[in-house]
Length: 155
Image 1 (cartoon, rainbow, N blue to C red):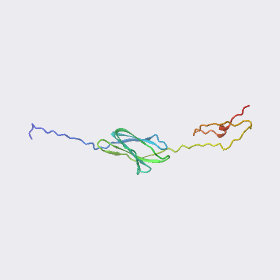
Image 2 (tube, helix red, strand yellow):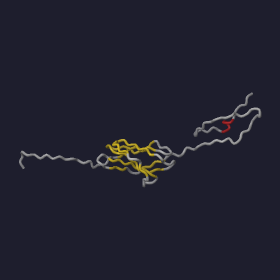
Image 3 (cartoon, helix red, strand yellow):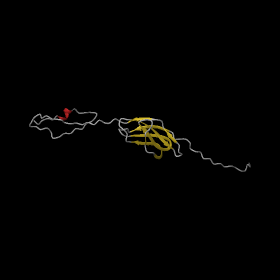
Image 4 (spheres, one colour):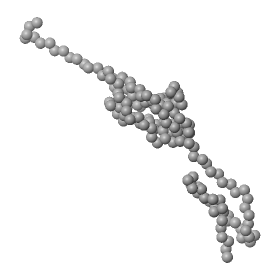
């Protein structure tokens, strides 16, 4: 080859590495909802497979936005139930990353309190009981029923 002639070569380096998934967490867990959050080291899509077993019977809708901070809301969950899930992200080159298995448990249902007055007794026949009353219940502090129904008759 002549030394006055050069060769120019152009190379394209293909992205062969999938995104690296980290910091997988679950937040705002309620009886029927949860938010799955994770981070990737490069912009990628967001998706979550989940279910009561590692067969992951359900898949959340794919979010095709290429981001590094991911957040997928899950709804229609059953109260007081343990769910398995994994997160998936695909970068712009089509490389897919799938996390390992994680679990979370939805909240227990909040007990409902129903109060019924089955009977009342008059203290004095000439002094009728109040026409109505109301009471707000706080599930952490329940007011004894005797305090709800006591009143002082006029002098």
